[in-house]
Image (cartoon, rainbow, N blue to C red; front, top):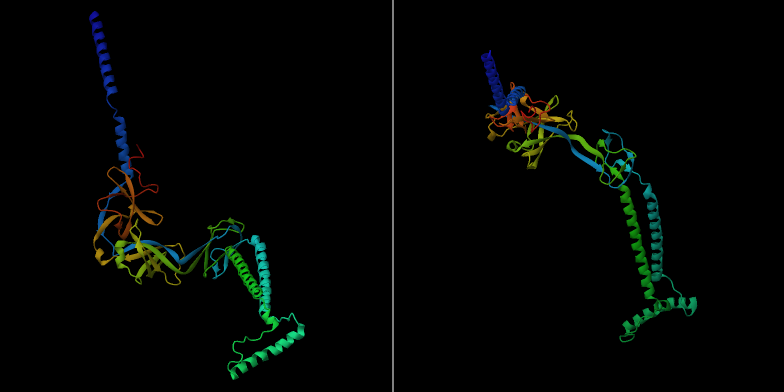
Length: 417
């Protein structure tokens, strides 16, 4: 009996010691469960976000570039003075003539000032006329002799010219006679006041200057009234109205946009390496909705965009083209001979191309699983693959089917950690 008890006690002690050792080992060793779960999660996410390697395929002879239709000229009319909108011409799409008022502000506050300016101009005109009359009278007005009265004045006016004429006659007939004698003057002539004449002239010139100042004030008010009206400088179409009747505007605030839509253009951004194949007047195929047409190159901008390394080019649409400003268009630009159209280019599946607006994009995955968004330019499509003319390099990995909410900076493993 005692031996069995001893055996049982030894077994119990061994079990206790072994359990303690196992518990100590389990407590000190790092858990493997989290690593296993993370590996499983990464494997599951890797399977859910598939990637593919950028391969090669022959590039296209023409490059597809997206652009937008725009009018030949768009004019934005802005407020030149503060005020309340009292008039807006028509609605969007209405035709406007050159000189037509598009938006007008109230001018009630200027009406009293305008009438006062006209009254001041009328007063200055009357004063100027009076000053002119006084000046002419001072120069040519008839005077009465102070001595002798009207009879003496009439005698002098009749006798003095004959005396001066006879004096000149005898001086010529008998040299030496009358030499140095001054002509006879009437009392009115001898008593003329030259200071008074100069004063009359100064008054007339002062009134003339006042008349010019009054006209200038009126011209300034006319300009202020003109600034309260937004006028179409040329024929066009009302594209948009930015204000309504009753709105209060401040200087510089947009009022309306007027555009000449009789001539439309397609504006595209051409990479600099394709610019050598373009010249003004070249015909370029353009796809506009369901319409295919040829459009000549109308303008090539002289400078390139420093960020995108592209040059703006405008293609003139033919008259009558079913297009409107803002429509999306595709232009097919020929590659230059130096670009070797038959050369290979990077290629990706068409499913790997995402679009944000009108820009084609691809999401590149680096070795750490980080995602970078690239703007790419596409070439020809062959089967389910498309040539990439810029933005990707052979050997990079891209997301095969990017989700709509995928963005730059995401990580393949960051969402499930």
